[in-house]
Image 1 (tube, rainbow, N blue to C red):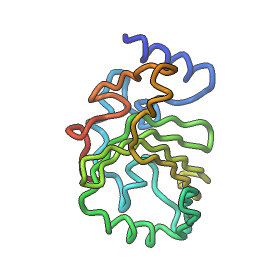
Image 2 (image 1 turned 90 degrees about the vertical axis):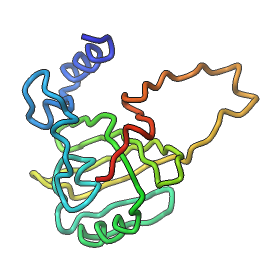
Image 3 (image 1 turned 180 degrees about the vertical axis):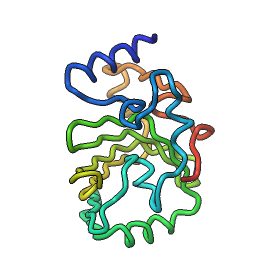
Length: 165
């Protein structure tokens, strides 16, 4: 078992988080990627792994916007035909799901995102998305930070590991 996987298992146990495989009801050692075919009408349902409530509210704080209803969310998502994405990891704590994911709008730039889903029963009633536009480290900060290791098929996948959902 890798050190990262062992750490996630420890954190999962201590904080009662479920790992991706546990959350999706997979047997130990099963591949999460194999189970993650698009599971709903919207990309956000794929990201969260749970259906949306018909009256869900999706919030985009960066743009000071909210979208009301799963149908409208699906309509808006439909405007991004070139979008590819993949889940890096999905964590669940009681009635909250946190997903780290990567997307490309078709221009080759990779956006690193976090989506938080709030559950009531078995449906998501509120979604908040955070994302950041790709950027480079400013010159003044280069000596103060270190490079973050980002395996192409890890939590922050490269373009070749993104897919249409």
